[in-house]
Length: 204
Image (cartoon, rainbow, N blue to C red; front, top):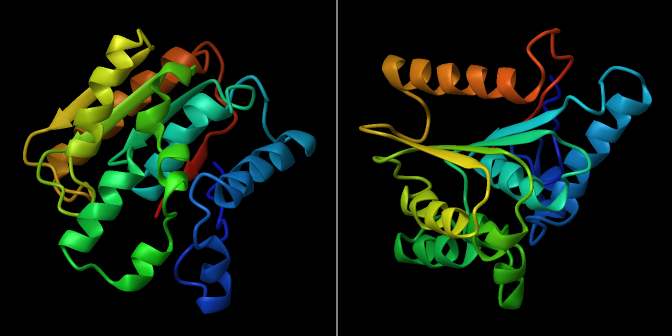
C-alpha cells in the first residue's frame, strides 16, 4: 500500500504544507499519480491492479481520480470525501474554521473546475462512496449531492450512508461496515483469484 505525503500534507511543517495551497485537484493530485507511476516503474505494483482509496481530502482525491486518472486505476473508494469545493468553501466560512484551511482551497472558477460534483458525466472508474450521516467535518450533504448526479449519468458506483457515523470511523460497527464493503469492492475489481499487489491510499 502506498500512503503518499503529497505536498500540502499536515504534520511536516509550514514549508511542506504551503505548496499545497490552492492545489486541490492539481499539483496535490499530481503527487499521488507520481507515486503510483513510481511503484509501477519499480515493478512493485501491477499497473492493471491498482485502486485509489482515501478519506476526507483523500476521499476527494479518490473522486478526482475516478474521472481524471482512469488510465492509472481500476477503481476508486471515497470515505467522507469532499465532492463540491464551492459548497465546502461556503461551509468553511459559515462555521468560521481556521483561515489556513480555507486558504488551502481554490477560489472563483477553480472551485467548480476542480469539484467532482461538476464532473459526474466524466466519471469512468467503478466507485465506492461511504459517508457518515453525523460527520461534522465534511458534511454528508457532499456525498448526498454527488450520488444522484452519478446515478443520472448512469455511472458505476455504490453509495453507503452510515447511520450515526462520524468523520473518523470512531465506532467499531462503523469501521467494520466500511472495511467489509471495501474488502468486497477490492475483491470485485482487483481480481480475487490472485493476491492484489497494491492499493494507493490517501488521507487528510
